[in-house]
Image 1 (tube, rainbow, N blue to C red):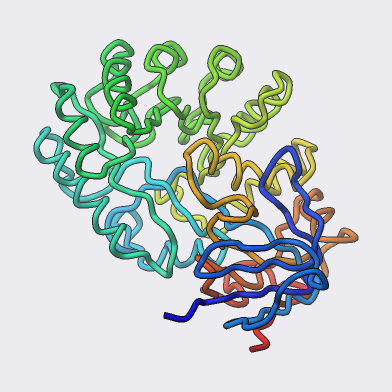
Image 2 (cartoon, helix red, strand yellow; image 1 turned 90 degrees about the vertical axis):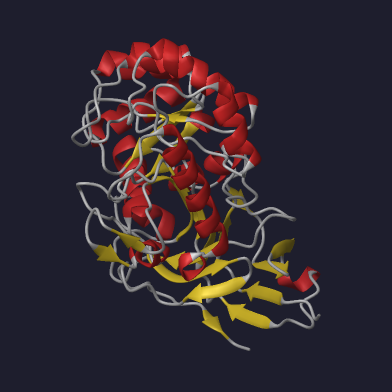
Length: 389
């Protein structure tokens, strides 16, 4: 079978997704069969035998954005908001990978142990077998309930489940019980996220800093609340008292999100900051939620936008052991091509984002395959990439 070779030339700027070197030298990226094979200047690279050539017209290339916190149900439909094609809409906002924090909005969601395990395994399977619009949905995240034992976690792991839904959304709300189950999950390679803050929907409850610290889940889910944040001193305590992921979400308290990010910088642990939307939820679906978070944190938090992009790409990829999210040879060829929105202020795209403006997405690519061209959701980009062969 012939190889599929993608060549992207005339890139204006390459954002790497890596905090230590957020902007790469080069104007060209090449992938073969969905994996990045070369990054640099076109004059120094082998561009022959390309299956698809994209001429970027000087726009910026970034890793595909990763939404670290979503609540899918089945396919590209969410009964929470009676909305179809919400995942496709997020792809038009540059999101190429999503991570489930629990399929909690399924009508009649089973809460018995046999049922919750069955649902998690089924959800993992159907999103493994069906990728809406090509988006990588990592799903099958059971909400843990009282009565689960170690063998339940082994069974889930053996069946391919790699995530826990938000700890605290089920009957397990005590720190001691949660800590034991998180340890069992970790033992079998299952990553955990804990709900943080006040109740998000009827049936959930307050999870404060003491429970979060005792449970010791891998990700402090929506540290800025989903929707209600903890008091400021509890947020700073969580950042300072453990080394777990600091997840900031769109559907949370924006001021609290800025506090968490600033605290991470103060303690020199910016690599812990990751971004999610926490959608679909009562606030709906935000197709541009991750881009909005990048612009908000950069502009109001006064950090370089290329660093804010790392929160939604490389930081998440490293924390969750993904092969996407970083522009690096051998990784998945998941890219977004974007530029300054038409008539937006700023001398270039990064400066415009730093002023709080959204960019215009001109193309998304997943596994080396062009999935969308001009975004139907972002403002129109000043310059647009085009397929030339």
